[in-house]
Length: 349
Image 1: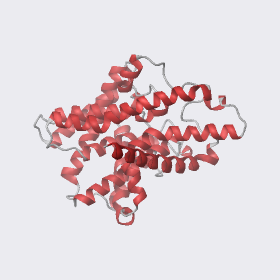
Image 2: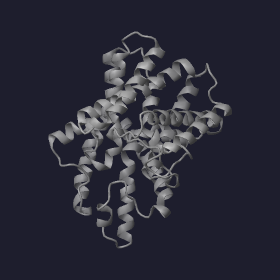
Image 3: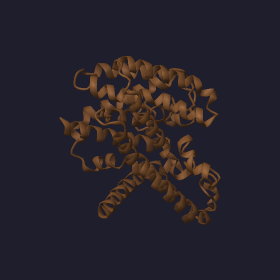
Image 4: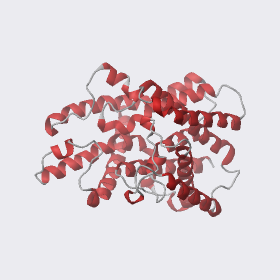
């Protein structure tokens, strides 16, 4: 059972990172469930599924710092060098001015100090949320009552949207919102999985009906664009007091459902497991690969780099024709880059 649980978690991570990358290419991997309506919060849910009470605070802190923050720091240093190195070649520095505030504080407040690793913004936030969750877990109260408290904090966080111009309040808002989903992942593992059959076609019908009703509240993108129903957690941007919570829940459920119903067919696919084992490296490096592709295409076509430089870091060339090329190359390249980096690490250890 432990191996099955581990495999399912890994495949859920695979699906989660595929959804993130598809979202950055502005298409929806799962029809009706646009990535920006749940993509990042799914990782908080997965972290809750993996939460272990057995560790003392210092041991837990050390483990999470080693697994989350050490790679983050190394990536920040590496990408600062990469950004500096390529700026004379492409004519733009993809990042904020280099100073102590932007390199030490901004990673926790917005995580957008360097554009090329901006998808990693959630890592310091996840680390903070998990540490606070661990501390609050020492308060012995009923699990379901605790869930109600965290849900209340998430609702309050949404109401704090107007204060998110203050970056410290933004940091607090994201923490309050994400605590609920960490706890939900823990509750799912401890109280729901294996006890209740929530992955059946009757429930699927209810979820699809609810999701179709939620689309009536959409105010950001059209369904034709493949994405919608979004809330932007990194900026504390919520359009509705309850829809972000509901779309997070429906998105998490559909991902769990897909992994459960397809598990026997995909459990032996080595490449899918490699993706799940390299989600950190895929998250960190896919924008670099996307931009290498974009600048290469512009160079081959004799077009000025200013075409790219005048847009944001997520702009890519001719999306109607190239979206899925970017997606496949990005996933494959960053997966095996992760494998290579782990090989190097083993050699040094």
